[in-house]
Image (cartoon, rainbow, N blue to C red; front, side):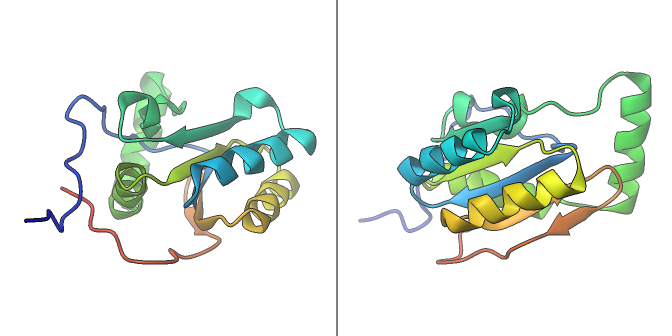
Length: 152
């Protein structure tokens, strides 16, 4: 009998937090995600600001992306929590990792660089591209392919 729900998530993986000022994109082929990251680096993006995550392991979790911290950061997170709920999107990114896909995360800086990263990623097959800004989340492309069912 097959398990149609897919593999069980790794219980050791920390759950994701809001990836403040990061662009996240799903690339179905982890090898292509590595090529996309190399293209971002070739375009001058800082290697500290380009991450490829894959696999249903602690190393594949989005929990390692920097986010707001300290008292001011906690206040910002409270405002974000009250004004926007991106939990379904973040859970879908986790489901993509569990499904064997990759996520490329880019911390772009300026609007121009953010759009450049979006375009580079799109050329390499990225979909479900979202920028998690300080006060809003911007969707650049929708999910493509079979629908995944995140485990809550």
